[in-house]
Amino acid sequence: MEAAYYRKIADMFMRFGIKSVSMDDISRSLGISKKTLYLLTASKQDLVGKILDNYLSEEKEQISAIKDKASDSIHELLLIANHVTEMLKKLSANTLYDLRKYYGEHWSKMEFERHTMIYEDIKRNLDRGIEQGLYREDVDTDLLSTLYVRMATFIMDEKIVLKGSDKKVQLYREFIRYHIRGIATSKGIRLMNKYDHLLKN
Image (tube, rainbow, N blue to C red; front, top):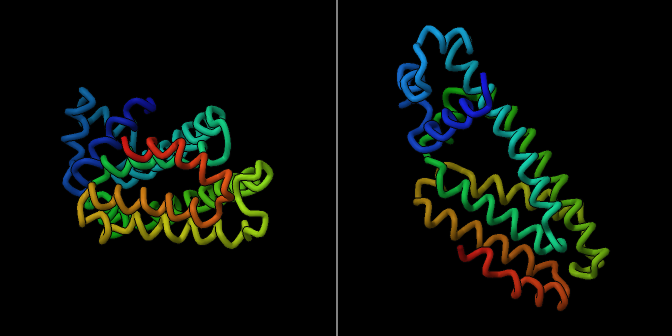
């Protein structure tokens, strides 16, 4: 199946939840017959797994492109935060609920890979920031990377999402500010203030 198909289906799932989107809905949206759809994927269960794999693959590419674009470690963190914010605005609470309840195996696999990716990215960001004199030298990078993953998991919890997209976006933005202010040097704080507009879009 083409990546464009996966993106289109993922968008439907994110907006409406997975359970409420039928294979008929998907085939109509893609402009193909249901028979053709089942030639491309064995089942909805199989399709969800493929969509999550495609999502993680594209997410890694997008984060890599953001890192290449960033001027420094704080700029990088805020650009990534802006990217995550856009995703949070689109994400339905029903999607997370459905993933956990009906597609637990896929959810667990995705969470493991996502947590690993976040941990590694934050660890590299912390190491880079210390070298640049933007983060304190006494920061325990392993411990803070683990804490960051835990907080990111908390924010993605469907119970938090149920409070509404505005609230979850606000919570995430405040978490990023809290994280940076807790580790930044005076030079880093000045840069954060310079880039803070990125969290206000």
